[in-house]
Amino acid sequence: MKYGVWLAGALLGGLLALAWFGGALNWNREAPYELVQSWGGPGTSDGRFNEPTGIAVGADEVFVSDARNRRIQVFDKQGRFLRAFNEGLERPMNLEWHDGRLYVADFFADQILVYQADGKLLHVIAPPDGLHNPGGVAVRPDGALLVADTYAHRVLLLGPDGKVLKAWGTPGETGSASGEFNYPADVTLAPDGGFYVADGYNDRVQQFDAQGNFVRKWGGPFGVNLHGPFKGWFATATSIAYGPNDKVFVADFYHDRVQKFCDHGGYITSFGAAAPDSATHTAIAVDVDSDGGVWVANYARHRVEQWRPSGAARGRS
Amino acid sequence: MRSLIAVLALALSTSAVAANLTYRLRVDGLACAYCAYRIEKAFMTTRGVEQVDIDFEQGNVLVDAARDVTFSEAELRRIVNDSGFTLRGVERLEGGAK
Image (tube, rainbow over all chains, first blue to last red; front, side, top):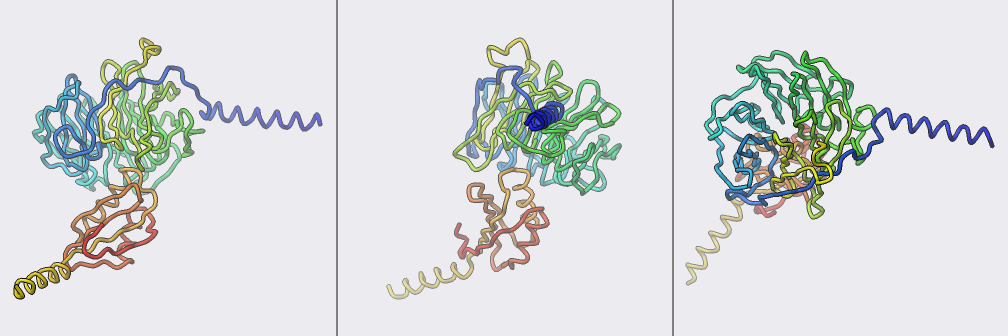
C-alpha cells in the first residue's frame, strides 16, 4: 500500500514537472484585453471585407489585407475608410508597415510587394528560385527582408533585390526539430535584430538571435507540435507581432484568440472570441500599436478589431 | 406563336448543352485560409477552371469548369493531393448549380 502511494506520488510529481518545465501549465498573469472597437462585416464595398488575412498599423492609419476582394484597405484609427489599392495584388496575407512603406506577402503571386502609403507600387521582390505561397514578411533596419515562405517550409533573409542572403529550414520538407518549420506563416523582428517565427502547423513560435541562431521555441510541452486549447499552447499560429515593452503577440487561429508572451516565451494573457455561427475561425492576423493597443484581423467575422489592456491590467503591460 | 415557342425551346436547349459543369469536392481540413487558398490556387492555375469557391460550412471546394471542359475524378484527386489534402468525394453538378 505504502509502495503504491509512493509510486502514484512519483508519477504525479513527474507529470507536474513535465508540465511545468515543458510549458504545459500556465495561468493569466494579466487580465485578458478588452475589445474597444471593431468595424467591417462581409461585403465588397468600401469598409467591408471578404476574408481579411493581414493587418498593419502605422502612426495614423490601419492597413488591412482584404484577401478575396484582392485589395488593401486603409482606415484611420477610428475606422473611417480612407482608400484602397490593389496594383499587382492577387491574394494578400500578413502585412508589415516599415519606414513609410507597406510590405505585402502575396500568397498567389509568390512575391513580396512594396507600396507607398498612397498605394503606389514601388517594388516587387522574390528570390531567383521563387517563393511558395508566402504568408508573412518582416523588414530589418538595413532593408533586408525576412520572409515566411509558407509552403516551402522555410524562412528566407532576402536582400532588397531578392538575393537570398540566408535561409532557415529544409526547403520543401516539414520538420518539428529546432530550426525546422511546418508551414511558417509570419515573422516579426525584435529590436535587438533577432526574430520570431509563427511556425504555423507546428503550433509554436521559434525565436532566433540577430545572427540567425536558434534561441528557443514555445507552444505546448517543449514546442514539439503538440496542440491544445491550454494557455500558451497553439493550434496553428498564423501571425506574430513584437510590441512595446518586449512583448510578443501571436494569432492562435484555431483557438480564436491572440496570446501575449514576454520576449522569452513566458505566457502572459490571451483574448479573443470564437464565431460559433461560422465553420471557420477568427483571429488570423495581429499587429501592435506603439501605445500597446492590439489590432486583429478577424477572419470569420470579416472585420477589424482593436483590443486594449483591461482596466485591471492597464499600466502593467 | 408556334415559331416563338420553337425559338425559346432551342435557346433553352442550347444553354443546357453549353452550360458549365461544377464539381463539388469534399476535402478534409478546410477551416484555415492557408489551406483553402492553396487548393484554390492549385485549381485556378489549372487549365479549364473558371472559378473556385470554398464552402467552409460543408468542407467543400466548388470548382467551376469552363464550357465543354470536364475533369476526371483522378485529375481532381491529383490536384487536391498535390496541395497536401485528401479528397473524400466528388459530385458533378450539371448546369453549374451549386
